[in-house]
Length: 189
Length: 189
DNA sequence: TGATTTTAATGATCCAGATCAATGTTTTTC
DNA sequence: GAAAAACATTGATCTGGATCATTAAAATCA
Picture 1 (cartoon, each protein chain N blue to C red):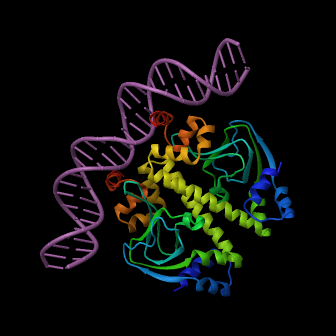
Picture 2 (picture 1 turned 180 degrees about the horizontal axis):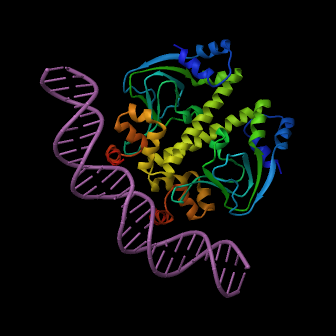
Picture 3 (picture 1 turned 180 degrees about the vertical axis):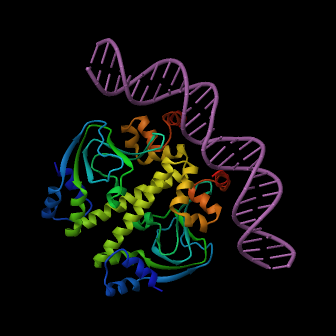
């Protein structure tokens, strides 16, 4: 049950087995059906999730009800509404399983508690924050400097697995264009 | 010379005076004229800057040469191309003084060196990363979910000092719209 | 397995915001 | 403090991608 999580952590930071067991002891498992949500707009993010199997989609909701995907979390990645997890403010994005999924989660209290007593966890968190920052900033840059066709080509090149695994609708939503626009793009390239 | 920096740090993290002096000892000063650049596209970010006076603009450059501002750094803020600072990869955004400015800077090597020997600096960095992540993600959300008029109203409400201090051209560029579009927006509101 | 829902593709039309152009105004510079 | 450069405003036109509509193909479900 903790095998993937253990590999994920030890791939990123030096930690002895005893400490790793302490980390594991704070994680509980959660099984989701397809299309099940794991949070509610307006409440604070109280958990950090690790995907053992399946896929999560994290998306903003516009004033008119339209959705825009911020990210997908596939197997062996962490996911939470980090902005809310950090600040404690109400979250502004929904997380939903787009496939039947198996997750592990640690509560926010336990997560920050570990930071105070385990330096290795502090390093792990720093690594996580750095990676999350880099990912999001590259995405911001992509939106700010590329048009839809360029964003699609970039996605094909850098994350072909996403294009293969996800429906057109999901890919279009991730690129922040309509399904129709993506369909037309694909027929031209 | 280090007064503002000292206040900035002690406002965010518990640190004794001796350690603070060690931190100061790694910072050097730099004076910039208006429009002077402090980095070159394609090289790695080797310094973290602190603005004592003036203002920096950090912007991406599109394939056609057009510029899009990622952020402004006013007095008492840190600034660097964090994506490159973290990864060591070539940077993809330019930082330029838009007013005559007085900066302090610490090199990347010294910055990461401090992390290894001073736990308080680790906490400071964590705080910095969290803030940078939250800021950038909110910006991504704003672009993904709001049109130009809404982004302008949000800016007026949340950062009126920016609208007051910066030229229309700079504000428009920050909103990722043309100067003409901003001018028309303003006449309608 | 057949019925319903979801997805994909393509055409027609629309719109936010870009671009080009002209004119006046402010700022910079020497 | 005059000349040059940069900035702001307003009008005219253009365009990438949205939206609406239709039909066909896949998934999903009873």
